[in-house]
Image (cartoon, rainbow, N blue to C red; front, top):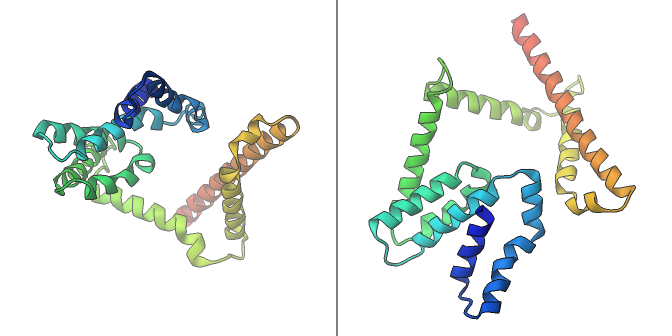
Length: 215
């Protein structure tokens, strides 16, 4: 349904006039490898992209009614459930309209929804506490790059695993459809990399817990 909605939006905004042109444009989202890969991986962007396109299209209009602007802000806010996918498009909402009002509403709405979500985090759900925890985790995650290699070798393993995950993430997914043994090697390699990462993270979490317990 979401993909059909996306195709309808593309046809409408493409300017296609003849029947064949409309059919060709409508089939484009279904023919892309990225579409099948996204659906196969269970990512949300297929469902979020139509809302994102609607919101940005409405903001691109020179003459907007107040409810159209409200609908645009709502659509973009909904798409921000996946910030990695939708956040880059915030620049369009910031610079394309002739007023910063939509961008301000989006930012305020996202902040309000974040604070509302914090109310479900339990007793220690104060915004300052949670933000401090996020900051501490980011600092711990970046600590390897800041501290250099340790004598225990944990940092060296982390650097190697980081490089391996980058290679695994950038490897072309079409290798999975290659004839054996390449498809088998690709699947096994991906599995081994992420299992090693999981083992490393569990080991580091256990080490950090033991250090805290000894303090």
